[in-house]
Image 1: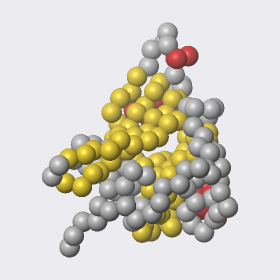
Image 2 (image 1 turned 180 degrees about the horizontal axis):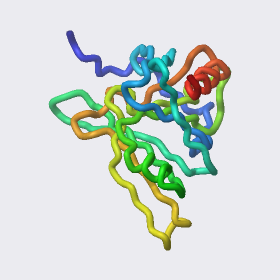
Image 3 (image 1 turned 90 degrees about the horizontal axis):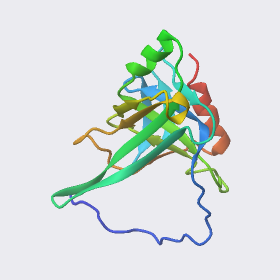
Length: 185
């Protein structure tokens, strides 16, 4: 078996207009409670374990971020450290505990910008094969409107094979419908 490190298509960026940021909703899954049908870096189906649901983070503009960093080495294929952060204002003891114990999650976000003719590339998944683990949790009553910032990332030596996983069922609407369906049993 040989490793393919050759580019396979043109890079044409003259017709697409990138837009920063994400829509104000993310779907958060506990690793081990969701199964994906995956072909390389494309998720084409989502199935929840019996009795399990996804959870959502919903809020104002720019309260969530997601991305990746390449981990380049001379002696192995390039892999990617995924990251996700959310700003929250947990008030009750239950809300605080819920976020305090959050770990080993998978996140799907919806990117801002053009949907294209089919909608492929709008929904992006992070932590798909190895989960995202809490790296920081910070709050100061004098900063950032007293919001708590939670940051999750791939663990070292547990990075992902792909920079992002594209979630795409058959079109934009069916993909969004599949995500919303994970919110209930």
